[in-house]
Length: 356
Image 1 (cartoon, rainbow, N blue to C red):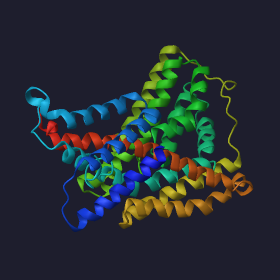
Image 2 (image 1 turned 60 degrees about the vertical axis):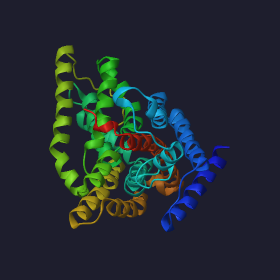
Image 3 (image 1 turned 30 degrees about the vertical axis):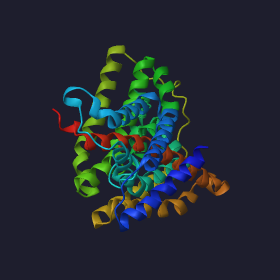
Image 4 (image 1 turned 45 degrees about the vertical axis):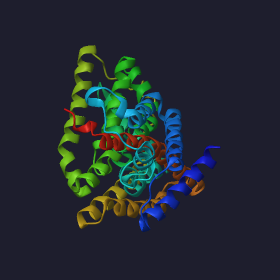
């Protein structure tokens, strides 16, 4: 049923878009119901994938758009035609609403970066980064915690997703941090904080950086250069937090609690899969290519390069599975961005954002 409704509302969007391109249209009840159906599907999918808070926020914003003229005091909006207001601001505006400019940035700019990160994880580079990080940090009192920070930083450099970082590194690092003597809350906090920092670590950052570059009107390279110092300071503060916590708990060095196998030669070779695409992206950005173009070029390099991993040569379907994971991540992100688009459109249409 959801697929049928999605097909119909997309067809209606295309049909009305063709009319708007060539003439003027006054929205009626039919267009309003189509817009409400699209909003309802987005809210339901958001509730399922991201939980209640974001979905409830979107629902409240939609309710305010429809009933704002009846609210008291400064929250009262100017009287308007409900058919036109809901239709234009939720579904049929190419700059606002569910399919507005923010969704456009995600689908044209963010998508290839997420696909790149998914392929890197799927071709074995993620596991190699974890093993190398633990190997480099095992002699320190704070070894597993330092390894979690380093692994999340390396993984975040190429994924730009906090969720992917936690899934890729947290299942290994959190138990190891606890074994070294840190409490469970601190272990989870270190992993969550280190993984979140991947969104501000160049060159591949989170969706917000790409949206920021598009909205502000600066190049993606400008954003990358501006965030280098804050990103380094962010991770330095994490290392210091772990250092002081280990000093307070008097944690000692131990070799038998690492639980992560030492890196093999292939793990070091797999680092080519990480730094090769990063080098290509930086080089192309400096040369003046757009961020999406640089990321697509990195994907075209990474796919054949991934066959240096024997596991990929034995099971090439790993790349197909990685692409599927990337597509799933894009779908989940698009659902959240749809709600963001609703909220931003309503803030603009009602004038609430002008209040201080």
